Length: 201
Ligand code: GLN
Image 1 (spheres, rainbow, N blue to C red):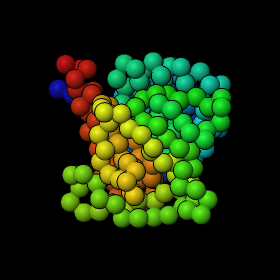
Image 2: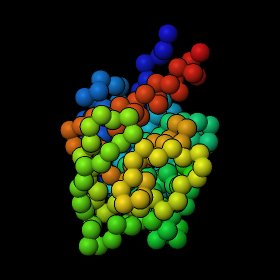
Image 3: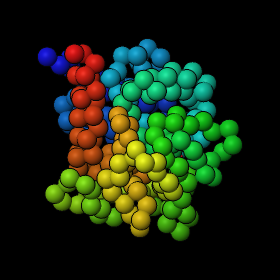
Image 4: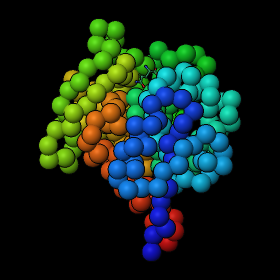
């Protein structure tokens, strides 16, 4: 029997509310994560879009960054979108020098990589295992410049990965929480359930 999983949404800064609504629409238990005790009470965490340099400051100031890194090293599921994906990277190009990374996946990202002219754009993208395209919104989005051998690429735009998974970590450079389509969130929920049931056993 599986314990019911609770999914946390990091709520220090940024566009967390839209993620909460998507998770609610998928009938999951959701908890906003602002403190250590919130973090200890959840089975996986969504790291939203926003501004990664600010999120980095707040993760350091709250002490959540250290706890989160330890949990991630032990296999805790995380799903980062846009700024959240930057936080999850192994290394950042064009970040602020003191910006921390959580090193949840072996990806190198270029912050604001799609550049000024293309600050925001939207595109229908093909995603591995989806029958129909997904309408993806890119907002001052990072580019994934490099992925390690253990990273699975689910979708690319102009040759750059935009949706990637490594173990229990999932990341997108676009914003699946800002379109009505719930399929990318479903992937994360199944990662959390898999990981939860293997721990309960
Ligand atoms: N450019 C932002 C950053 O560097 C990310 C933008 C977003 O999350 N929409 O954090």
